[in-house]
Length: 294
Image (cartoon, rainbow, N blue to C red; front, side, top):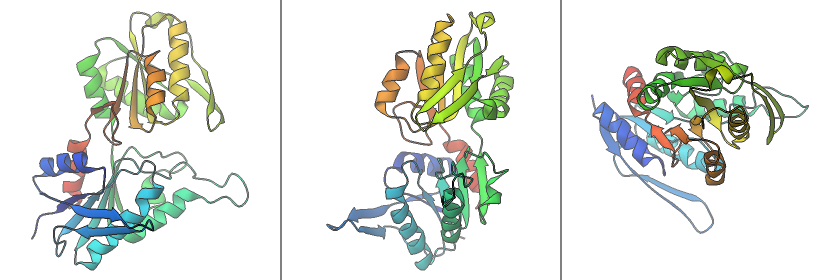
C-alpha cells in the first residue's frame, strides 16, 4: 500500500511539512494561480492515484480558501485517490450554531454538509463547540479533535514558574481547569457579557491573593482581542504582574497584538493559524490523529 501524501493548500506549507516529517510520509505540492478573471487554476504535482491524500488548510478567513480547497479535494478523488482527508487546524463556521433571528442561515450546519460531501475524514484542533456536544452532531464523516490543553500546559511549565490561570468565561472552565491541573496552578474564570460583535463587558473577581503570581489568560479564539485586552487591563489595575496571553487560534491583527503588548508581558499562540506569536506546535498531536485514521 502506498504511503499517505500530505499536500498543503497555499499558505499552509510549514505546518504540512512538519506533519509529514512527524509521520515520516511523503509531502506533495500543488500548483495554483488565478486567471485574470479571478478563477482558480490548480494542479497536483504528485500523482494522487491509489493514495490517501491529506490536504492541510487552516480555515481562518475562509471564504477565499474554500473554492480552491473544494477543487483540490474533487481533483484528488477524480485522479484516483483512495481516500481524501482534511487537516483544518482552525475550523471555521462554528459560531452560528443556532437561528437567532428569522431567516438566518445556520452556517455551521451548512458548512459541515459541504465539507462532509467532499472529504472522508477531518482532523482539527479545539473546534468552537458551544451548543454541539461533538463534531459528530453536524459532520457525517470521521472526525478527530486534537486538544491543545496538554500542549499549552507544556509551554507554561517551561516558561512560567508561578502562574495563575484565567479563563475568559464560564464556557472555558473545563479546559482551563485541565491546563491548571497539569501545571499544578490555581485558576479563576471571568464573567463575560458580549454586548455586540466588538464589545464585551468583563467582570474580574478580587485577585489580590495572587499578586505574587503571573496571570496567564487563555482563550480558544482571539479575533478582535477585546476580551483579552479588557481582562489584561483590569488585572493590571488590581496590581498584578503583566499577564501572559495565550490564544489557541490567533485570528487577531498586528494592531491588536500591539495593543495587547502594551498591557501583557507576552502574547503566545499555537500554530493552528500562521501568526508572529506562534510558539506552541500542534504538528506532533495532529500527526498522531492522522496515523490513527490512515
